[in-house]
Image (cartoon, rainbow, N blue to C red; front, side, top):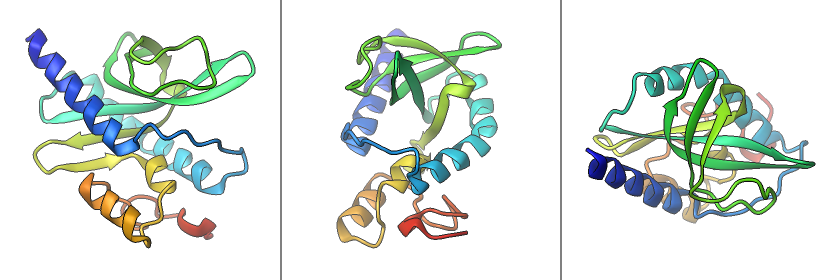
Amino acid sequence: MKSFSVVVLLLFVSFVGNLLADDFVLLHEEDVKMQRAFKHAKSTLEQFLRLVDKGRNPRYIFGAYVQVVDKEQTEYLWVTDLQKYNDEYYIGYVISSPRLVSTVKKGATIGFRKSDIFDWQKYDKNTRITHGAYTSCALMDPATQEDAQYIKENGLQCTRKNILPTCCYNNESP
């Protein structure tokens, strides 16, 4: 069973690594697309966490985009192998490379509250579709050939209708 968990973790690290390419993006609080993506992810978080709370399911790979605050620095890091720790905390492995915070390292197990999750993703291995990943979609422009291909290859659902119905491309209004 332990080797299966390691394989699933490696698959997720590989998948998210390809999906996000560990790009580092500095955002401003005024970034309309990202703020709307955060808001949409938060509005759908309960449904996602109900699946996580049921425990591991070999069909899905779960990830969360977690806010980490260190002194005056704030960074968002992708975490995998999510598990409910207790009524207040979740735990998981950091798969992003922190660049602003020094209290967390890639590969570390961290604990975080539900309120620290600003995005989530669920990869369905049967359908090869990624649900969630709203911030990833907000950073892309599906009108460009490169981003459209990336979205398709990674099973992202980056459409205005399916992903961010009240936003998000080209800073458009609802």
